[in-house]
Image (tube, rainbow, N blue to C red; front, side):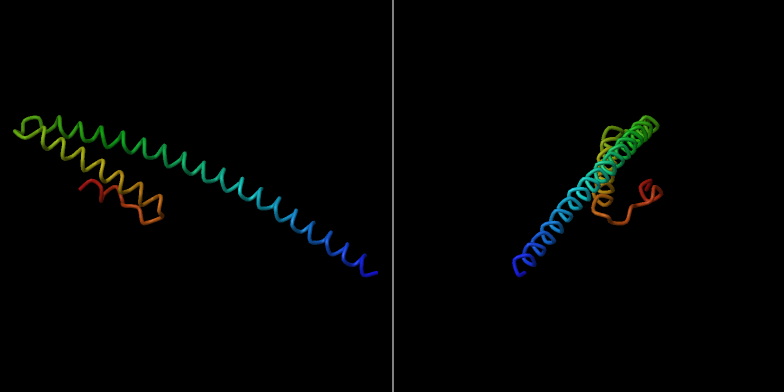
Length: 106
């Protein structure tokens, strides 16, 4: 009688452990797929943003071609764009508030 109870208890514990292990594996796989999808989206967004900012910096530099310090200004704008881009992406990765495009145009 006592041996049967122990056997039923062992089967129940093993069944629960197996269910928990399979559920954990399934959840981990779905979380990983979701994380990879989000990472691809962020990567694509960063690429588009970098391309747009680079075009804007080049266009601004060409528009300012008459100025005497064009190279210095263009370099400064490019560095600032890169710094803003990096700051925005790190903020989005760590879940902080994203800056508006109007803030970036300053």
